[in-house]
Image (cartoon, rainbow, N blue to C red; front, side, top):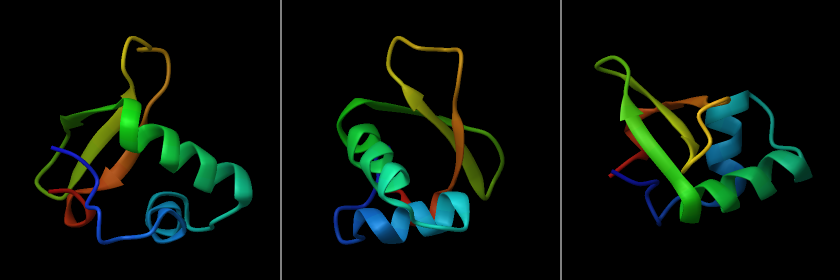
Length: 65
């Protein structure tokens, strides 16, 4: 699984955080390349940086492919 390419970083940030600050958009860009996605429920997954298991973010499955 990965973040869909047809959705811009600011749109993904808005879905994940409710806002889309510059820092959040940079984080989304980083997670596109280095993100590891694990299913959580039917509608949501957890995305975290590969190799770092101390932090993760909830992401809607609707913006994943």
